[in-house]
Length: 95
Image 1 (spheres, helix red, strand yellow):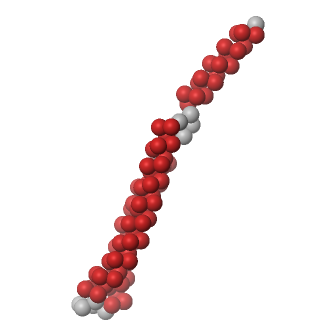
Image 2: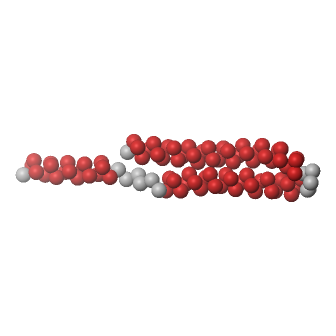
């Protein structure tokens, strides 16, 4: 169970990092790149383009973390098997 909890923790961290990177990237890129691109095209168009790219990167990172979380089996199979064995042992002791 500890191993599974560790995997979940790492994937949740990936989600959090992905969200933070997307947010920080959006702020930095929107501030810098918009001004740079704004020299060639209207500022509102450059803001739209940069925003779409940053949002796409954030979406990719979040989906990666969610997919990894969905693939983890959280059922404690070993513990369930041990409990079944203990139940059988207890039944044998009572007979």
